[in-house]
Image (cartoon, rainbow, N blue to C red):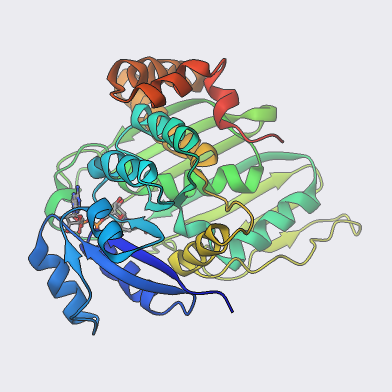
Length: 365
Ligand SMILES: NC(=O)c1ccc[n+]([C@@H]2O[C@H](COP(=O)([O-])OP(=O)(O)OC[C@H]3O[C@@H](n4cnc5c(N)ncnc54)[C@H](O)[C@@H]3O)[C@@H](O)[C@H]2O)c1
């Protein structure tokens, strides 16, 4: 029996509380401390979770050193992901961070380089991948062989109140990264280009566009088509969306909630049993902890994850310009921005060593 991994949780907001409960519920982890700029929020989260005496503080590295923690779970707002994670990595602490990897792709590239320069593990938790149905769907995709089109319909009507009803590109930025990331996983393919339109239905209660339609070309000539709305009352889809995968030998569909269904006229097409990845953030915490203990590198490791945020940024750029956007152009601009903004010489040296940003990000296939 190895000792539990001692974690500092950074960010005691809405999602931080979910992580707090998940850490406390994992027998292989121990909560070393809670960090938040708002110390009262950290103390209240600890008290509400039944651990009022857990140490709190405003700085992750300081609290990790004070408590002898092994790793950091970063559940701060996207703007804080880059500074909090960079500081932790260079303090020798592996990091599990909430999506998105950072506020923008340029900062995401800086974090890829920071992981390399520090030699530490940085994993982005894309919790919706941790779903046994997604893994079963992927086995069906493998069984279908030559793939053509994957599509997601996402129709919900939430009244969030607050910042979401006021922010620009709310659906693409705040939600669509989940299906975009799942699409990369299911297709085992990476984005090449995108054409995207955003719009706001006349009855929308959002200040800016809350609906979007995007067509991605993926590597291998595949297409991923996304259509979503956050102001679509009636016949709502699952929060995972509703999926269809069309292939030469048949079709697989997934309603987002139940087991996916394989429909093929070819009697030889059968999906292999799939592994159980665990459920949501509990699954991503379990694989992170196993990796910190010497286990395999989990999906979502930063090199692999950044292209999901690239899909969001490319879709937003297409919606703003009305043009089809090449993903390599988005990467080139982000790379130039990352070099211009980088404050650490060791991180800049890693960025400068890359001969191709895409090669630096795309895992060998
Ligand atoms: N996977 C999912 O389904 C899912 C769902 C919701 C949110 N999220 C993600 O979780 C993250 C947090 O979202 P949230 O809804 O909990 O936000 P939130 O605003 O409720 O909470 C964020 C907390 O971080 C704290 N904070 C900000 N900067 C900090 C810093 N530099 N150091 C320490 N603390 C800092 C804030 O004081 C606040 O308490 C975001 O990245 C969001 O995208 C993921």
